[in-house]
Amino acid sequence: MELIRSSDIQVFCNSGIESRQLLFPENSSSERVTITHVTVPPGGKNPAHRHKTSEQIWIALQGSGNLILENKVAEKFAAGDVVRFEDGDLHGFINSGTQPFIYISVTSPPMNFRAAYDSGWLSTIGNKQ
Image (tube, rainbow, N blue to C red; front, side):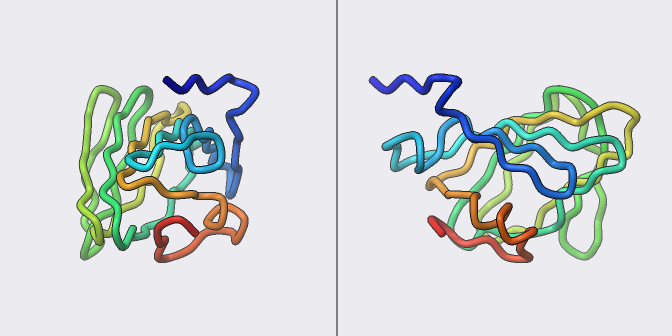
């Protein structure tokens, strides 16, 4: 059993996006998953990117906006929706709503997103940076 205390949850911020690392390589020994609570402010953008060797699932909790997909395709994404990206899929998000957009991100195998946030963002994010 592994209990992650709120004091062990790190928050990364970049371009107005707040990413709470609920379970990731720096606070967990999990070799199977990273779980992140993400808040995108109104008008905010999670830039399009790829994960080379991890799939990712987003569970929308609050708000709405548009997914950024291959070939600049935009797909409506709102509270209650779930989307899964295979490893290598281009994906991102634009909050076109009037309230913060909040989602849970589940990534497997686990990734440490610190480098992406520290660098100002990356067009391609690899595993365990």
